[in-house]
Length: 176
Figure 1 (tube, one colour):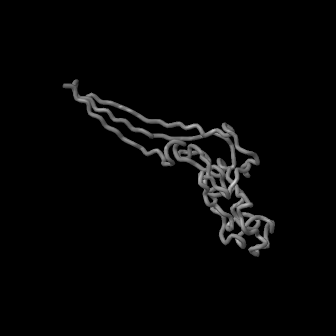
Figure 2: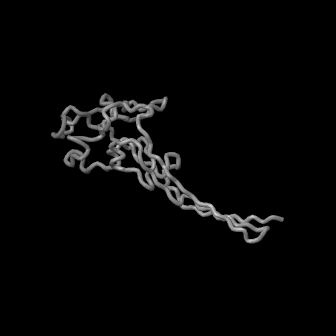
Figure 3: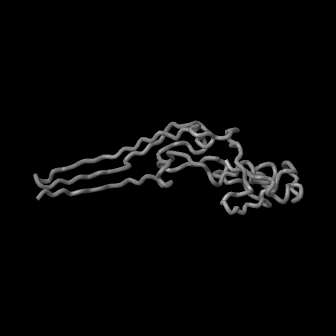
């Protein structure tokens, strides 16, 4: 999880007049995030995942299982002509996987079949005041999607985040 490096910030909450929360916390709006020549961001650090309390490790979480069914049927119109109909993604269901805060917020179902790291996650640092939902300090409530360190992928974790569409294919085979 990416967190805020307070050394890259030019102000703290006290200096901008916010009285709620820790007055010495960094004002996230004053933090620099210019990329360096090697592409790294000096304004961030990797931090333990605030949702789990630890650094996440490889294999720590399991993706949901996916059940996907299709159907194929054929019909011989004559000894020389055969038609074949195939339907894909007739049924898609996902279930199981690790129990985590993001799976409680977005449980596996017929569309949500995996989770990936959330690039918009606030990491527990990108807010002012007492928290991301402190209206006086931030002006708006936090978007619920930003509150999860992992977010859903749709249909499977390799599909580019698009639900699997129901597809029909028809083939006609003619023997000469």
